Length: 280
Ligand SMILES: Cc1ncc(COP(=O)(O)O)c(C=O)c1O
View 1 (spheres, rainbow, N blue to C red):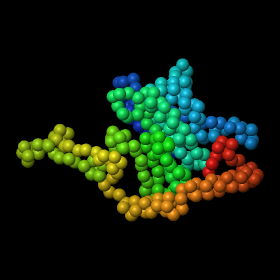
View 2 (view 1 turned 30 degrees about the vertical axis):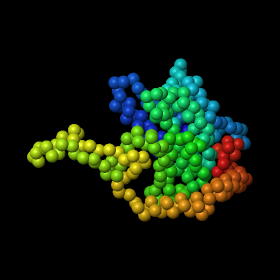
View 3 (view 1 turned 135 degrees about the vertical axis):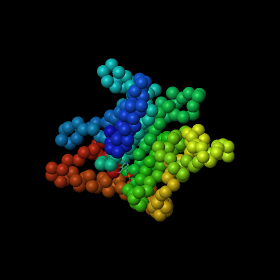
View 4 (view 1 turned 30 degrees about the horizontal axis):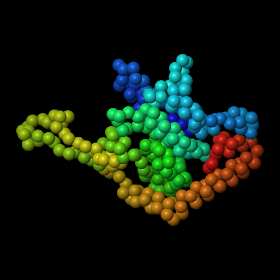
């Protein structure tokens, strides 16, 4: 995960890793959540600081078996299951190079492609919660397998809304973490006609269910329809009425102006400063 990752994403990943490790006590597979180091820069005060931006050279080394994990331990590139990147973090204006990261992961997946599965060796997930509505998002350029975004921030949609993009083939291969009538309708109770009413039915044997195809498998039966309609309006407004390019330009110029003014205030120190490719 990027160093500038949203904390709740890290918690979720760590929880997943711990659960897997707990279940797999008898195997020697151990899940780990690693942070991908950022580039550094020398700030005006002379300190070397982390920029918060993924260091592409380091990521390349991690993906190609040239990264030391610990003493005498090289990170095995085949063991990397997923790379999660927060496009713009919650607490600073850096922008992670999601297209370049996607290119490195695509190369890595090409190298480890196998004939038995069309699924990628390493998944690439982008958290675009802070960039949706501020920047143009192009999942083809990013080559990401999944991208999540919220409606309540820069899209100015209703709270409690958001969207998830998952490449269709990959969506169809994933088990949703929660299932209900929307994501996973019951297909039938097989052989029901042959069962006497008084028998208790072993549902583990008889119940047939199927996850919906595509993104629908991640949706819930109960949802806020008004919120969804509001999100649609907000997206139309941003894209059609104003234009994402216009918004992006304005946000960047306001960000620049604010940083230059903040710098003029005595004792104010800017982190993730312009020399670290801060954009917003
Ligand atoms: C990078 C990032 N991801 C995810 C979220 C979660 O967004 P929400 O609370 O709208 O689901 C936030 C919210 O601060 C965020 O900054």
